[in-house]
Length: 522
Image 1: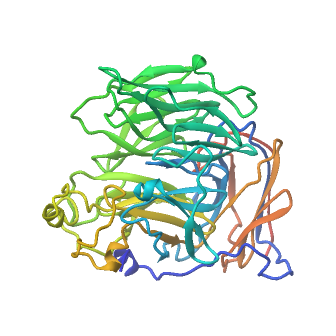
Image 2: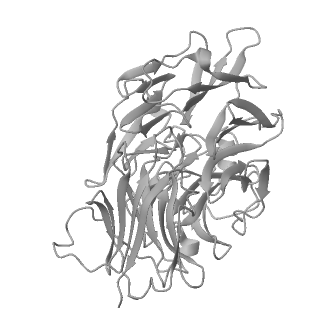
């Protein structure tokens, strides 16, 4: 049983997402309601941050709302996804898990999300992307963007009222192409933030070749295509440098190459925070905005680093490791904020960890695989089997590759070291075991609700409602999402304080035009 090390301690409880009027027409009297009018400004790819957090008289966070911004290895999360969470007064550690039907993309997938729709990508079958249908509980092939197939480091993102697409070296805003592939080499690993399009450009056609990192000014109201002459360009130290993640801290954008070069774009110029070095392993696989810092998930420590504007600082023990596994070659690969806590996935045993800041404590959520048994005799799972088939020793290592808040759940994905093809000759795994690779796991903890905002080029009204049996999010008076959530203590929000514009999702990058909280006396 996957997650078995935790399920023994916690009774799983299933909570169903309901996005219709299935609760009936009679409105309950709210226990608490939080309303804001927020101006998010012009959408230039920024992290939006936190709307509010609620603390009880013990100064513990019990509720909040905001926008997650994370880049996990291949793809960036949908910045327009809004989360509202309320932590239960009792049994707050309870969770349930369910493995979805297999996407049939062999041994590994990575997750993309857009408009609260979940997609799974794999390099097999010519970079195929599959779309999840929650109503039929089935997968189907997703449409190929006009710019071409989705490659690692590509993306499809909401930008204001439009869609910015960067795939196969080409970039388009809505139906208008704004950047075409280069005559020599290729563009790859795109990132749009702070009014600039960032990407790498490598050309190996010349004797020495080159890799450059571009920062190109462009916004959605630009009438012309991207002008590379206006770009700020930095030469990477090594040809073929590749990032696994991007991130932003306030008015800075950060990228880390596979050679350990840490580069910061600030004040319209590039600077090197750490020099790239061949033969030295320092790779960052995820970046996430968290309170007043940017977190980076690193290999080979398997721990997080933080950036607060000056240097990278290692956070030892963030997260810890499961007993009985090797401390070598560990990789913190994925991060998310869910139910107000930090969630981290770690290779090579697909460990899932949850961090509660008030407790200053990490909680193991077990593994995303039921096999093999943990061991510290080898660094990775199935090393002997990999050797038998003349594969690299870590071929069957177990990754947590994606984390996407969807409705009331957190969707997680798995993979072998690479998104490899499956062959029937691998008889050492049963069909059920091999399908734990390349799968999607739905994790639910009571008290989280995610939905997609509808972008307006003006301030928007958002309302977060806690009733006795459900949570609700409304925008401009219209109900956007709701989920079951039971509140037994009707005085749960008595004697609370609210931090407006500060919290787990980072500081608000916008202006609160108005804010109000109401609590029903009971």
